[in-house]
Length: 299
Image 1 (cartoon, rainbow, N blue to C red):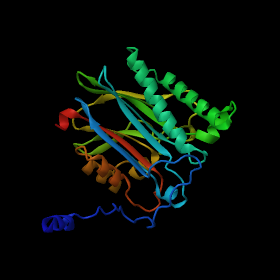
Image 2: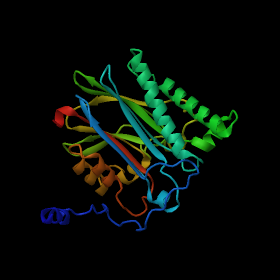
Image 3: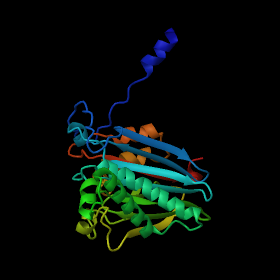
Image 4: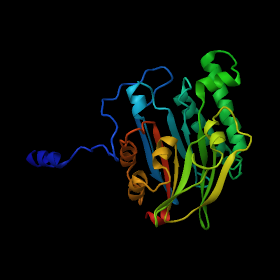
């Protein structure tokens, strides 16, 4: 008993990670039921023969203070026949009434649609079809909630959300990555040797900023943004909402250094969630991050 007490005394509670000037401290308030609710934190982690996955999603300080639910979501599964990891990350638009529900619905819809394509022997790259299925899912959910057939504006008012989804498929020269996005969530390849973050889509400070930032499902852009490439040992694929992407910036600051250090090898899922919940003044949005490592670097 004495040894047990001594061991308990040596275990220190995790202190919140603070970057630069912290945000205000307060006890989070429970979210109201309106618009759906979900846990404050969510995390996941597992490995296939080829890749290791970690993901986490945390409620931001603004939503904790105003009793709003987390509006981010993420989902990942493995297609058993091909060993392909299918994943999605979504960020519900804050003005939508049930943004968190919309984000969760499109993540699951995208993963199911890609998985079905793989079941049919296709590579899972028909992303326009995936987007159409995600939009149809939002329409069905809105009809069930409103008890009538909604128009596009009504679906948008309920469920507007960004979406990044895709696949990580084992290949002869590395893990083959295929991605698409709608909205302003992001994806990066973290080069651990430098380290450096390479954005896979235009960031908020480059390219057609306005067109990218304002687009969200159920509205579908005329041209779908897509990215295809390979992930090799020494690299990490990161997919995240702007709650992570905004403080990350170009990756050269303190946030980039923190995550480059702790993502050099796959952390525990709980530790990733803890890191993602860092406190920094003015950055109070929900944060979601999904990371994939090739197993050649992690065994």
